[in-house]
Image 1 (cartoon, rainbow, N blue to C red):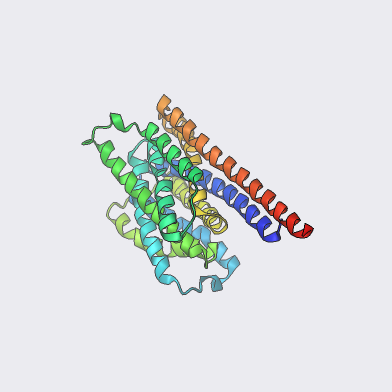
Image 2 (cartoon, rainbow, N blue to C red; image 1 turned 60 degrees about the vertical axis):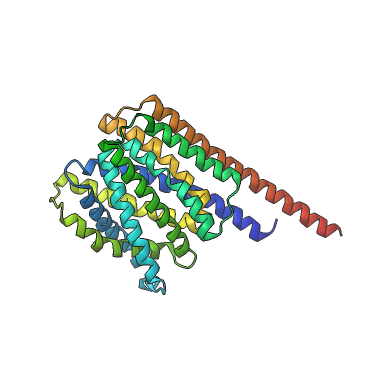
Length: 312
């Protein structure tokens, strides 16, 4: 097995672990958003998420040095941040106004959009098993949503549309991060995100402004910290692996959010949520297993090829 092949397989494994850690942190962030929303509007929470995210990112900037911000892709950074802010505002609104498990489940339509965009704009090769994992995970999310029981004129239906818009914008942001990660350090991508998004997100926040209480300050700061570190892990994962492979791992947010919603907010976990979570969990484990089998097959083929060359 060549060193290059070994490095590629190691990078893929590292990327999957980083993405899993990122998903768990994002799941915890969903809970802190709901806790902060007891007093604060979702748009204001988004501003403080960026503000505290900026504060948490400053030590990273100090460690990396200001030279890390040198770039000739500032325009792409701005586009990424505008799209990301749209995803954040709609996503936070959904987390505050919909049942938590349902809001997160709707976000799991993001991998479907990401996979399509990865093929169209990144030129990634997506095999049938990755497509099947995404589609099965999406079906699991539909089981949780129970669209057959939703009144199309209800607030819940409107919230569903907002959450789906957030998923589409999140997929676009993920693709832009992948573009940036080809040339830009992960630290720079995260720092530019909070530098640009903090002042812009203040604008909608001012229209709904309420000064936080001491308890709310804690949840807002924790939201910013969790979001920043989760984003660093996600960006690093995208640098090491295919975005279409890694994004379905975000399905692992659901068990964290569902359990937290039950413990903290007495939101019941019905059988549809349990069944859907099982489908999502199974699809994620399956694709991880298939990728591992494929990696072993690549190693075996490489060793056979090497032995054939030696024996000639």
